[in-house]
Length: 69
Image (tube, rainbow, N blue to C red; front, side, top):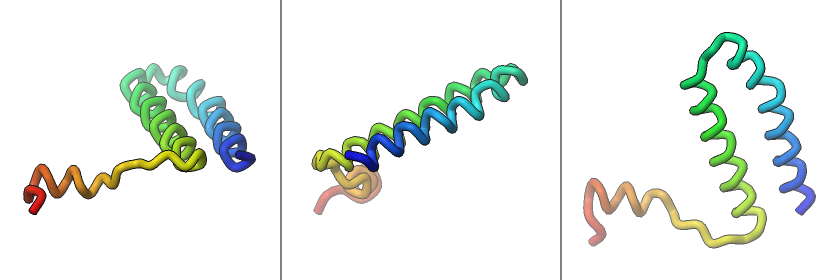
């Protein structure tokens, strides 16, 4: 649990550091991608830290490109 709190605090600090620069330069698409990836990464780490069983992304790739044999 302490590692989860640390990662969330770190994500908040990174957003606090980067978002004003993106907003100042009016890079709205980049800001949307940045926020999406930051939330996705933080959320996946949170799920991993709480021992949630996450599926392997390789199974999706295998299904799309090669089928599940």
